[in-house]
Structures are given as structure tokens and as C-alpha cells.
Image 1 (tube, rainbow, N blue to C red):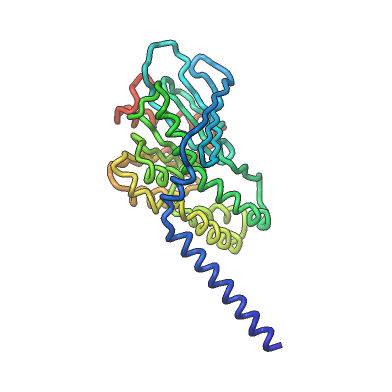
Image 2: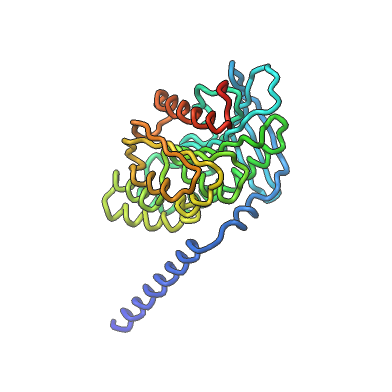
Length: 313
């Protein structure tokens, strides 16, 4: 019995050591080569018209690289017949349930091309602990895949004759917000980086949000696991590398999902030029049209001041 216990303790120690070494590898690894190799070169693009209204042509965009990376996007192109040679462009990364449909919530803006990459993982409505652990590899693969996906989208936009490549806005809100610092750090083509209702410290944010529905044990376990696996995207790891690209942050003073301290921690870590705007609001929700209009109005004001957008946009 003593011998069995001894071997069991050795097994636990070995497994623990492997877990620690894997964690160190994931934390310390330089992902610049990984993201570039995963992107590859754009070899195929396809546009499928969806509908047209008075402001935009709504289209679906499919991209494929020579590395097998496939990206599905929602695409809005100005429908105006005015002779405009090139438009500013917004790459929009939305909430976890919107993906490419985030373009449907582009309100009170015109004369801008907007493209929203889709997420390759569809989240469940709710999770048991077993379902979460089972889905972790797919979630991590999809999360890391957003970086080369957005880079491939940027390659595509650079080929379009109607895009003003000096006026690219990289924008992420809610679930899409943490991707912005990492993408901006590795791809320097954006004219401005925008983080809407996002913050730093993914482990802390995971713990906070899991604890809202589960107990302290589950929230701590999930946050440790999730924090290590998602560390390659940790906003605090990259936000100081956005500079000299201007950073705009918009956050809510009553945000129940991203408490104020996480937003301030990210902003403090960022370098100039940067600006943080506060709205008296809870977390952003696509169904909250009034809040969406306030966010767009606040953002337009900042981008007009930076001369990325004109007052007519």
C-alpha cells in the first residue's frame, strides 16, 4: 500500500511539473512567427452581395490564404453614387455572439468601409465545467486564429482601390476588445486602435465573470486555466506596443463585465498618444441601440479630431 502511494505521489508530481513547464512555455513563447506563418499569403477572395439600403451595400466576404486559413466576414461598402475615390475603413471585432454580423450594428455612420471577421468558434449559451474543459482547445484555437485572420483581412483591404490605406481603424468591443493590442503590436498598418468596453488582465476578467454565476472554486480554477491558455493574447502584454499608433478607449462607469479597475490598468500601461472616454453605462449590448449610438458618436468625435474621419462621416 505504501509503495502504491509512493508511486501515486510521484505521478502527481510529474503531472504537476509537466503542467508548470507547459504553462511557462505558453507564457514565454514569442508568437510573432506563429501568427505570420498562420496567415500566409492571400490567394482567394469572394464577395457575395446580400442586400443594399440607402447607406450601404451589405455583402459577405470570404478570404483564403495559401496556408489554408479561411476567414468569413461581413462587409459594408458605401452605396452612395457620389464620386469618392477612397474611403476610410474600420475592421470591427464584435461580441462573442455577433462575429461577422457585427456590421448590422453600424449606426449613424456613412462613407466608411466596414468589415467584421467572423469567429470560428460558436459559444454555448451556458457551460458546465466538463463542457468548458472539453471546448477549451477549440476556444483557444479560435482566439489565436483571430490575429492572423485580421492580418489577412488587412492584406485584402490593401488591394482594394477604394480603400484609403492611411485611414484604417482597428476596433474591438466587448469580446473583441482584447484582440486589438496584440494585432496592433504585430501589424503596424492601422491609423488608430480602438478598444470599446474592454480591459486588461484576462485572468482577472475571467475570474470576475465566472464568479458572477459560479462559486469561488470554479471561478479560480477556470481563471487560472483560461489565463494561461489565453496569455498569448493578454492585452497588458502588448498595449504599450501600440504606440505611436493612437489608442482610444471607451468604457462604461457601470460596466458589470469589465469593472473600472481593469480598464484603468490597461490604459495606464499604454503609452501616448492615448485617450480614455467614460460613458455612464453598463456593458455594451447590440440590443441597446441608444448606447450604440452614444459609442459611435463618441468615437466619431475622436476620429474626426484625429483626421481619420471627416465631419461628413
